[in-house]
Image (cartoon, rainbow, N blue to C red; front, side, top):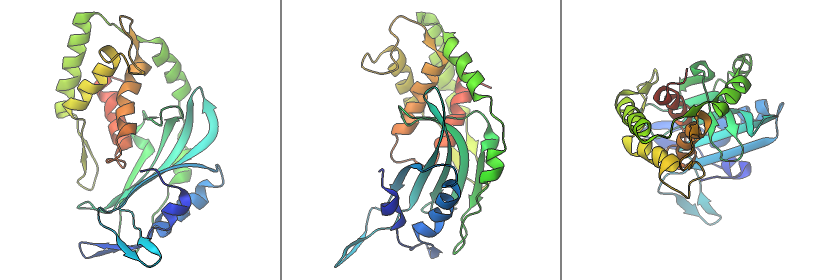
Length: 252
């Protein structure tokens, strides 16, 4: 669910599987303080545990999974550069991620082409996060060039071409896995690949439906990316799933 910054910072410390974790403020506030040098615009998603405790003042809220997107003011078409902090406490090896991406301010989806824009670290009890913001900012980007190219490049809508493309996407997603150094694996499901395909060629109410016209590469990409943006359960693997779109579509 989307929450305000004040609501997020009220999250309490917690203990999961005998591991003690700090409050949400302890984890998030240093990121906000660092990014406040560059922006005042944030988008936040957070998932609390299924069970919460209450007191006379109300609920004692804690958040097991958090995503904070700092949206930079510079805009390229409908995209802004963002820096994101995401973390998960309720997995086998709790981790946090800091990454850079391009944010579609119309659909809330992201685009990323460079795996070096992601840094993953293990969360250690009673320790705050190391934030590689300056290092991420130092990476150059050719996003504007690629965006122009992918808006102009198209994929044939001929029936046989579409069928071959769908088969290729489904086969690739069976084997395409993004794995970090801490054992976490991220994949696309064939079901979601079919959803992305249907939103381009079958579902007439979809924003990405092209009818009998060719679909641009960016329209195809965004059909996949929209499914990631709309997923309210897996909020911490957005970057990895976005990078897997590149593999499925053959984008380097």
